[in-house]
Length: 506
Image (cartoon, rainbow, N blue to C red):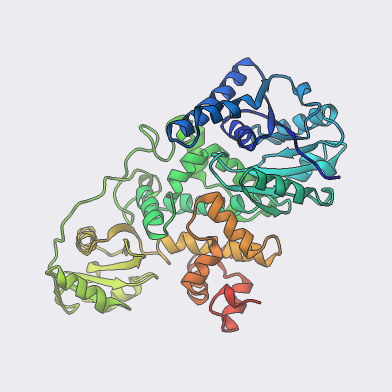
């Protein structure tokens, strides 16, 4: 039975639900928006008016079109008004009991042919469907915030979804101007299953004092080319929401990578939930400022980032070691510094993406050794060993600025910051593809459109090189011995077979 979806209901008119209602109304579809009471309904109306008002102010809508959009939305506090809807989407808080109760009511109220959809970002669609007498007509339709702007919709089918229904819902998403990615019912689906472990891993690095909050955010924005740093993004998503999604992932996988970092629980307990609370990892009183550079800051101190230093180079004689050292030395020489033998330098810079402390015993002054990892065109990770003199590390920050890069101070750990966060995320994507859950193309599309990334994970792997990513994961696994850091078998096999990119696969 092919659905026309002439009338759509939306239950829950918070920021997300109101955005979903706006998407359908923009596409010329009649919408019935439902909230629990008059006050919540008024807030929902306000969300719709504010969103369309911003589009009007930016010239993206005319006043006449805005009025047409708002005129297609009927607001009510009664679920009974959804009796004739062709599709109803639930967009209430991410609590299974809430969702199951609503679906029980919708199953009683809505006509038998109606499709019931959940906007859950992580919960089991199958478990929600099981509360109804029509599990074959229940599906996931996960929008991304802000719904009128974000182009991705994850369509989640279950083992009992009616044949052809996922395709119909995907076609509906296309009517809205969205790009659908259809997947099975696994916790987190595509985007959150890849995104949240990365964000959680960043929190673990912060808690362990590998680098400080602002430095990690800067490294991932400028070094990895991401639109936001992980802590800014956690604040945007909401720390409580992120914690809940990670909990769902961990419940399904029992993988330590999905166990929420303790610092998330601490901030949530303190009421520091992110932007919606005015404070989170960033904020006027929650986690302000910083406590010095990594290497000296402890787990709590690393959260409190100091203002970035503006030191000028305070050393004039520098030794440069490692692959690419000659080119970097030439840059320093062009800035007026003297390139000297290690015996005569005040600072020894070792270009590397792996810990440099092993070089220290061979140097006459090991306290002058600093690791340097050039990331992209803008960032240089400055790694202090356990012996590095803090004054020397600060001097190297000045050297980095002198050659036009942003220094990111960190501890001397495998793959430092950017690659330590990037490679496990790429590894997760390879495992997801290898499991048959989603195609490489769909995973790339989901991460580009759902997160605003310039490249999807497989596009990133192909740009970096399979062997580079494999070797980086091996280095991480050798240091931390965490199973999730071991290169995915498919990655190992492709490198062994001589493949240089995923494009080499048939």
